[in-house]
Length: 299
Image 1 (spheres, rainbow, N blue to C red):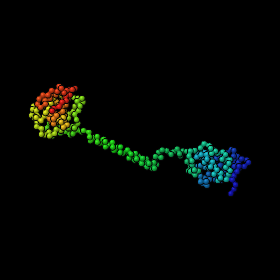
Image 2: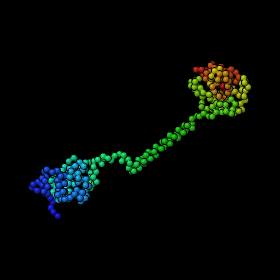
Image 3: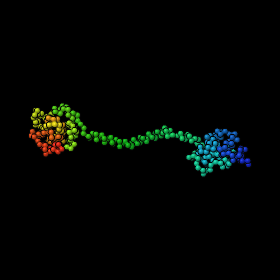
Image 4: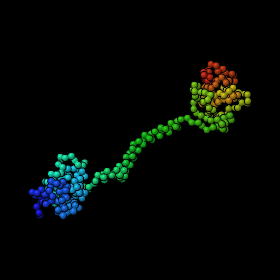
């Protein structure tokens, strides 16, 4: 084995041009070429990526991890070429110099240029099967976490929907009730009754088929109260059991009566155009009218 190549008195490395005029990379390249080695052959013998050697010989130290790596690689090349590393290391950054690149990398790590690193985009990361599986598991965990609250909300909405009063279908079989709608809603406050907002409402009459019908102009014996309208007026009658016996908008000239379990609670909208008879006798609304709405009881 020959002795390591040294710097002679003329300032050359193994007969190469003066050291002072060469960079560290150029000195290594000249020494390799003087040894008759191709850069690829040197990389194979050192088990180092070719691009790292090329970056070192071209003085592109920013493509290498840091100053420690650069000096270690240069020393390895000098040992392989059997040349003195001192003049070459003297022209390389010291160990305390600012890092040329971030991260600790092994000398045998595959070389990757700056352009390749910048091409490692977020879309490439998200396209990874492992990342997709992790995201899927995360979404499933979120759904399972919030599922009880969602189910509870749906149950609450369903319960409120079932508990809300709904309009029953029209009753068309009973005489006098054909074409009217049935509602289980309680009577509206007197202050909320206006001529524009009044709608035609009626409800079921217990055993309606058994109530005898009176001839025109006569009072039905089962009707304790009778209303005679001289204009559009709304009337409502609720018996002692809470059953709405009558809820209807009377047209001008229309007569309507109601009965049921006493006492009967009566509400009349537009009392000024409505005449009332209780048990066949005229009933004055003067003492029970407020804002043209009459409220009284039949006992």
